[in-house]
Length: 398
Image 1 (cartoon, rainbow, N blue to C red):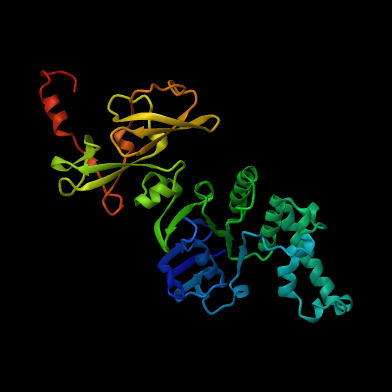
Image 2: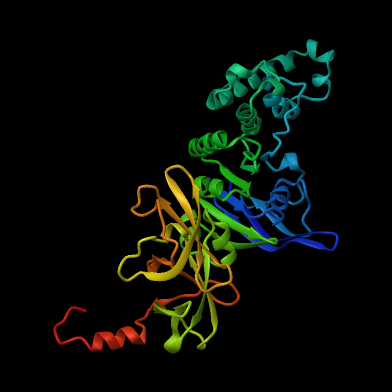
């Protein structure tokens, strides 16, 4: 096991930049997920770490040891590919043992005829068989040793590919979308198995995916990437609850966050579609803002003190125990507001044809400036509320 440090990594394919100067530190034993849309550079970064792709600039260090001059098999990393890359003519045992036989046997000992007369080879293969057996038992695939990859299910092939990586006892595991070829039910099962495997081994893992559910459920930290840049690095909770930009907020969370128009009003107060919110920001009056609200924060029956938006019900997506409701925001050019609600929530079964108010707590709002960056907010009482409170009789509840 070892830490992983990237400094100033850049990569271009011809005139097309893929990775901008990129710095990243991964702690010993950490499970870090690189997540982002297709083409954002995450798989290229993984291949640079593995030594399969040279960077244009920057350094890669594993356990504080620079490895830029080392070939892939010398870096003590193991990579699990999206296609699993199993040899179809080999059995499960032979696929798992291959990295060890290549490392421990010389060319003559691997030749079909001469290997039969080598006493050393028999001793080495006996040791390799023991090591493969231990890993196979951890993955519960020892009963599959005699099968070929074509005789395995998707989940079994995934375990064999993991086992082939594990027998090498690498310092770093690299995984490039290893679950993308599995069906939905098996993906859920394998996510759990990978998380348990990491907990047992305590090994450093770098996992690439475009599926934000995989990223949120397995990783210690997420690195959200787009256009060759890390937009935000943090724990799943940090990235979800405090997205650094509109791009991060849109990518993390399912369904995607609602983005509503806002602006800076008088006295620095935040206004959502002309409605004052109990918060303020620094900036010039009238400057445009974007207000983000997670669908799960939207209430179809607003509570006192909620921000309210007038909408018309459009359609429903039934997810079983919950629904995603689509509303058209009144007074806008087709702006859609999503709400994620439980089926047993009162009023979820029917909506009138007339406009209705949906709401959300002010504390659930994420505020972004014109460039899409998150900005800090602080509590603020809109002038109209201050005047109303001032007009209350002395001793009245405030």
